[in-house]
Length: 224
Image (cartoon, rainbow, N blue to C red; front, side, top):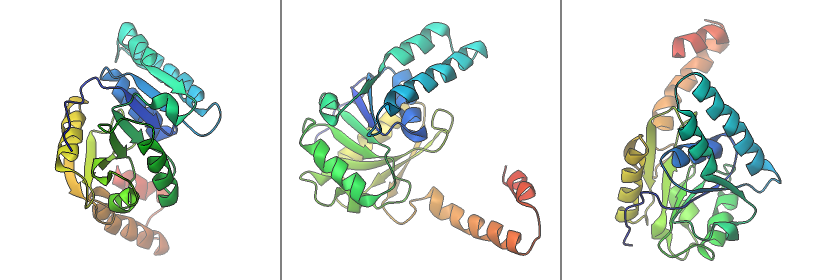
């Protein structure tokens, strides 16, 4: 699959929860027109309203100019259906962590968006290969795993499934850099990189709690 520079392309973000809204903000700040979709009625509009408050707070703190905040917000448009996002050149999926739900969404999107549109999933642990299974063009599906809070956390895992086109992964890697992130390439193995590394820490923290070695508050403070 041949891909072009993704700078400034229209972006459809599906899922207006914490992660989806954060991704929409980052994309809009980078100059993209963003269509924000959520299956829950009114959720996309509510997410934009909350984002407006967050941007206002940044302006008050002197971390963003008023004009930049207004332009960022203006670039985000809540939409009602996937068909409203048919002009997207990049789809960012940030819905519930459920394999069947993600498969169904991407299969629907394939019939709506252009053949050159890249399909990216923000899954934190589900196999990218499994999500792509059943797609007509699985090579254009790639993992683009952000961390919470998206506007602040720099790391992005660019996750390739068995059929992900190398050009697609490279395009998402370059886009992540353009968005001010620090991307890393990963294969679609269980937990990818960060969650896999963190598992022993989670297990030991639970063991410390069971041993009553420290309170949850103390453990949290040590993690920080």
